[in-house]
Length: 353
Image (cartoon, rainbow, N blue to C red; front, side):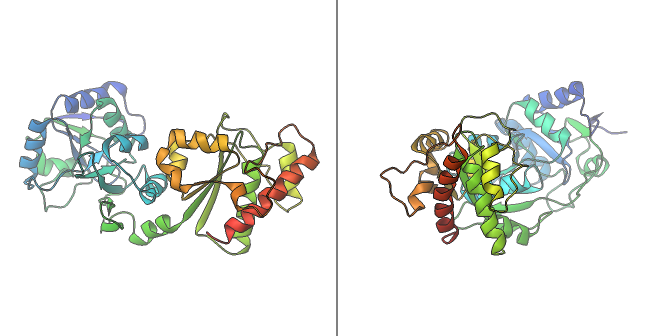
């Protein structure tokens, strides 16, 4: 019989009642074994010094080796770390939730390890706890990491306050750790994600086109850049687009589809999306159609200034304005004139990325 109190939570449909019990225990300073997709871990309130001291003691881990923290949403990373580099955001987008731990600079210039687990039970408990959650693997340092509650309790039975059984960890291998605290990134530990996958994600450039409704100008630019890249066999560049004043989910305008069809491009499957902090953070180059779009991006992400340009800056034609006017509501000829400007600028962009 287990000395540690145990509760079982459905891994596919985590019950609110049981999840709240575990979350309350963590926020109250107790140590709680929880499942993740990699291995089982011991969750503790990272703001509770007494809880952290207990965790170091039962893990038999030196105090100069800090614990990684689990978060429930990508944006939580910005509360716990400063000056997150674009390559780190690329990895968050591609691998979170998932078996990736990022080492970043904390708000006191210390190293902080962050991970968003791909486990519904863990995400629910972390979110309900309302506190930063330190969560090393549920084993004595140096011992194999457990992929089930049964294995975790072999080392930890009676040493922790509560244990959550959420089924066997689906991966069973520890997370890959990537260190961004120096000038260049380093794969500090290769785990479930291979180093080659990390490098491919970081080395892929992302170009983000911005307009108002993401149904005309930015769609043209995205679609045409994709055509150029495909023709050159370039798989190391991602083209995306978004709008600053839209509800996500609408399609490309009729005239936009008609103009692109003449270029052999089918835009009928396009779905608009709103320009978000997450999109901006992971983009290497952001190209806006008008100054108003540029201003909007700087409002949501001031640090993007050095990556943000007006698309028309790259066009040959000079009519005294760097804005590309919105053709919405105009004739098909107006759309074609707009596309000519965009096409010229995108062709030049494609040669320098």
